[in-house]
Every structure is written in structure tokens, then in C-alpha cells.
Image 1: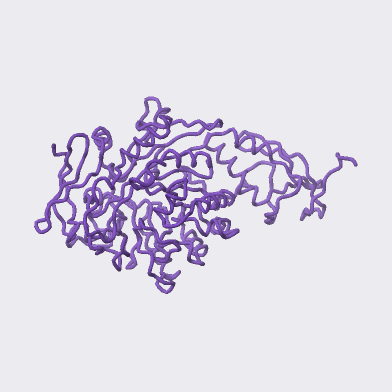
Image 2: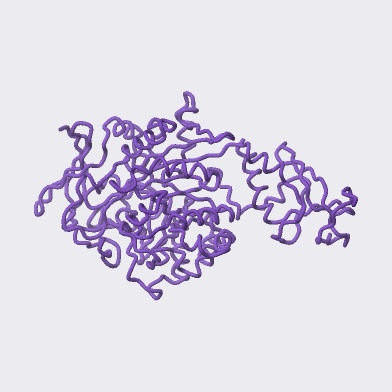
Length: 466
Length: 68
């Protein structure tokens, strides 16, 4: 056993802050901590010492948030808002526009289930959140989340209002049910200014969906993807990885995504973490760590994608994520940006900007809804809108060009922290934040944190029983 | 039937009040040119690009060219 780092965490029982250590045993890294009242907790956080060391070689990329809404009183993680001790600015901010949902997922970390329509924040309140975020200066990507955001009928208006405040990238975190079932809905959201669907996508067979989401959803996912593609919405597939459920589908999910490029821009894996009530601590066999996900990607793609194609994200804590960027050529072959970057690792790093949070934001910020294309082409002129295609018009030369070009594609993963794995060094560098009901800006893993009895630090009520 | 006859569309040129006809148009952007058939005014040469085309395939082509 060897000590790798000294950090801090919380007790999973009483949520008090306690000292913690990252310790290597063989090839595995554990977080070990001791509560004077509730004893020792030892939890696997990284299976693979080589990548652990390679990831930390990147070093910290801290940046002071431009606005601190709270002061330091009790210290991390109790003063979020953000507090002056936070070490990273907001990259992607979640707005929970409802707590209602049209599914009852066993794995959900949002408090979705018992809420009703009257609990939804008003449109004016959501606008107030957006207004508050503008003070944070740097470009912030907005993710509309919940609950299931599409259960709100005014979602297009919410998107428009956020857009009108200058936010350049808006995505929804969705199960895809309404996108699949309601004709024209994807186009409506795209027309309102939505860029991307961050689509829960746990596998390619219904047995997986029944276990993870409690419903047979594969056909829904396929239809949602088709509808988004036709509406010009980018799609990021987001599998929640659960040991003994869908780890064996990692390669199949990637193949499915590649078959739907360019509409599908990325796959963003999220190993399961544990929120809600747990009478006993989850055992290590119930956890899959990021290096294992990368190893499984290599194994299940027969080496087409390799562990060496991945690196840590750019500005979050190195241990929170992995990112790989790829080019897909006209023949459908994958080319790793890292492997094709020759001697220039800096170049590879530059190409990964903003990819760590998994959002589908393109590097050149080329959003269809913010651009007037016709003005930029020679020999074209604008006329009043007419969405009906003109019979006989032939744009096959565009099709041929698009078919022959390459596309970019990214594969990433992010390890959310729960009461057992929480490392305050990582939390302080978190760049995915949530606007809470009382308008504070809370790092994602603090916002969702619950004790073993389901007590929440930041959510208004304890989570539904998992 | 004369297949070379210009195909009139239901679109009218706002300036010339003439029906637009389908015809070869050379669309150029960043040094690349594409021959496409689009409605154009036989009078003033005005070309109609639907919003769906502008925000669909043309946008994709534009982004691809900008990436190079």
C-alpha cells in the first residue's frame, strides 16, 4: 500500500468533512477516510495506476470564478454558491426547469418523481437564473435538465429566452420520449434555438433499458435520433454504465453512434454513482472506474480505438474525466486526433477544448440558428421563408461533397462523485454547475450529494428512494 | 414532350413578377464551387434558396469548408 495524495472528503453517514487519502494497492487506487463517529470508508476510485499517473501529469488548470456569490463560513463543500475558494469557472451550467419526469429510472440522481406542475420554476424565475449567469462573464453552455425538461410545454419559449440573453449554446438533457413521439417537436426546439440533445442512451437492447430505466426504450431512442437528425439537432449519446448490466455494450454503443454520424457527434459515458438512500455502502464491484471504461472501449472495438487515444479533460480536475477526439474520413474510418497529432501534443490538447464536459458544442461554435447562411454564398439571394422543397431542385453536388468529407467525433467519460468517492480537491475544480432553487451556483457533485440516509446538502428535499 | 423546356415553379420573383424557373446555378464559397439546380428568375437572375436548404445542407457544406 502506498500513499499517493492527501485530500479531504465527507463522511457518507453524517456528511461531516473528514481527512482522506488516495492510496495505491497494487494497480488500484482507493479513497480511504475515517470518520471519528462512523468509522473507516475505503472505496475504489481508479483501477489502473499507469493512467492515474499519466492523467495527473497534466497538472491543475484552475481559474478563479469571476463572481463569488457566497462567503466561506464552514468551508468546502458547505458554502457553495460559488464561494471564493472555488478553483474553476463555470463551463456548462444546468438549469433544472422541472422536477417532473415521464420515467421512473432506478439510477436517476435527480429528484424526479413526486413533483407536480406547480413545483416548476416559473419562466420569469428561469430568466432570472440566466440573467444571474451572465455576470459570470465567460461563455457558458446551458444544459436544460430536470426531471425531464420536455414535460414542460413552454420549453421552446425557455430556449428562446435563454438564447435572447446571449447564451451561444443550449442543449437539453433528455430521455428522448417526446422527441420520438411528437411529430415536429424536434424541429420546434431547433427553431427555438436548441443546439443539441444530450440523450440518455444506455445500450442497444431493451433488456438494458428495462434494468436501467424501467421501460423498453430502444425504439424510442432510434426515433428520437432520427427526428433530431432531420431537424438539424446535434446528438450526444449518454450511457450510464452499470456493472453487470451494460458494460458489455460499450463497443456496440460506439458502433451505433458511428453509424449515425454526423447527427451523433459524441458518446459521453457516465459510470454509475450512488445517490439516495443506501442502508449499506455500495461495494467496489458495483463501480466501474474511468480507466476500465477506456480499456473496455479498446477491447470491445478490437483495438480500433485505444487507451492511448484518450487523455484527461482540459480544465476540470484530471481525475474527473477522459476525452478522445477523432476524425472520421469519407470511408468511415476512425483517426485519433492524438495519434495524428505527430509530435505536437499541444495541438491535440487544443483540439479537445470544451470536450471534457461531454457537451456537443462544436469547436467553431457554428450554430445553425445564429447564422444566416444565404448571405455568405456567392450567386445566392434570399427570399421570404418557404420550407417546402421545390420540386425538381437538385442539390446532389452538395450531397456528394458532404458524403466525401470527414467528420469529427468524440468519446468521453466523466466520473461523478458520491458520498463515498467525493474528493474535495476534485470538487473545488468542478466546472459543471447547477443553478439551485435559491439561485446559487452549485458544483454538480455537491448539488446531487446525499448521505446514506438520503439527506441532501443542497437539494430542497431528500431524494426519492433509489 | 420537350424535356428541355424550362420548368416553372410556383414561386414569383418579387421584383420582376415572373415565375422562377429551375436552372443551373453555380454556388461558390471559400473557393469551392457547386453546380446545383435551383429556382431562378429568368428576368433578373435572382436565385431562390429556401430556408431549409440554407440552414441544412448549405450550412453543412459551409462548415465543412471552413474546417479545412
